[in-house]
Image (cartoon, rainbow, N blue to C red; front, top):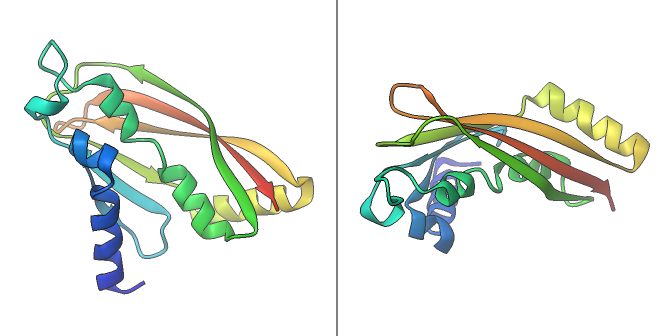
Length: 149
């Protein structure tokens, strides 16, 4: 993917209406689409009644990115869905928060071999939302369903 294509992808994801409305921005994507970095600044429109990040916006930051990584690696011959999600709020989110989604290529290769053998399976992925001091604001666990078409 070229630098121009990468910038277009980042812009398109950041302009997705639910993300735009919450102030969620895709900041970085690596060249092989195995790592996404997402951030959200605290603004008047994404604060809760306590003046910290609204929990729904914190969760929304985590919604599609593990699916994006897997779908890009596996290709169009597979169905990839979020099956379930869990968020554990650890401390109030203040200022700018960020989350990194990453699945290493060797892990993706193992997943693909497993799905090719079994036809379908579910997998769990974890990440965390951190603040500017790299303190954990929330822990995220996603269950992803993958099926060969």
